[in-house]
Length: 317
Ligand SMILES: Nc1ncnc2c1ncn2[C@@H]1O[C@H](COP(=O)(O)OP(=O)(O)OP(=O)(O)O)[C@@H](O)[C@H]1O
Ligand SMILES: [Mg+2]
Image 1 (spheres, helix red, strand yellow):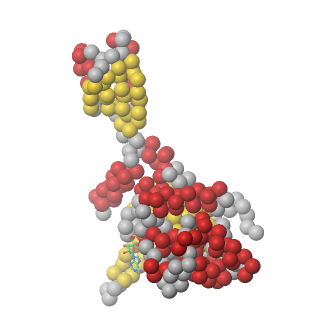
Image 2 (image 1 turned 30 degrees about the vertical axis):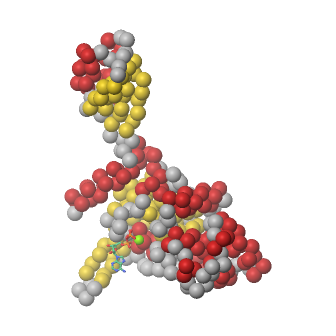
């Protein structure tokens, strides 16, 4: 057994250069990525198309070698069989032998993963139930929608009851109901103490379920942390609602704000920072008869945050 405090995934100063085509054109897919994932974490690896998500996952799966730096899974090189035995993997756009039924395929996956024959049937039935596929378990997969195939893929990653689950774009092709169900599955895995590492380019996918996210843009990890922390740090304005405002005070208040909207006797002010909130408060105290009734930091949405980074990266290159 391994040390429980040891990170499940440890990546240090990882770089990957691909050389492709006749001219061996150099593509630097990963640049100096360092990251540790602890046991029990749900980690969202977020980045736009071509950012390097699949490349990092391929290195973690031992499918490709890094050009520089190191990657360890359960403290071992990714190609080590002992590391492999403890993880489940869903590749991007997996292919399934579509003449099999979902149950047949999962049974095969269980057998190949070393699930004992006595456990196979029960394990498969449990997964079909978890992924709400019981009704279509005995139909050939060629009739399945993309969302249904994605569920089979997730079930296949879980078949050996792994400690670590690595999923490349697991929500691709899922409709909103499927996405919600996927989130429930992840929450269930967290409750069972599993570690989950998944990639996505869809911001809302990480928002509700991840303990931490890493944002990768153009091969570089631009941010790692708790999502609400990342977004709070990125807060760029505060909305202050003031009640009982008259014409004269409105003018004074408008001077300290970036933007003001009057609605009845309420004034909604957008200010830049805490100091400006203090100024609004001071004015209210001085004038009398007006009160601050609302204070809402305008949290940048992850979308805005992301776009700002992408634009900055674009300008820099
Ligand atoms: N085998 C390869 N040979 C050459 N270049 C590659 C290879 N695989 C990936 N790349 C390039 O490396 C960069 C990162 O690709 P990668 O597939 O890791 O990105 P991604 O974040 O997974 O993107 P997506 O969201 O589209 O899946 C891209 O510029 C891609 O074109
Ligand atoms: Mg990818």
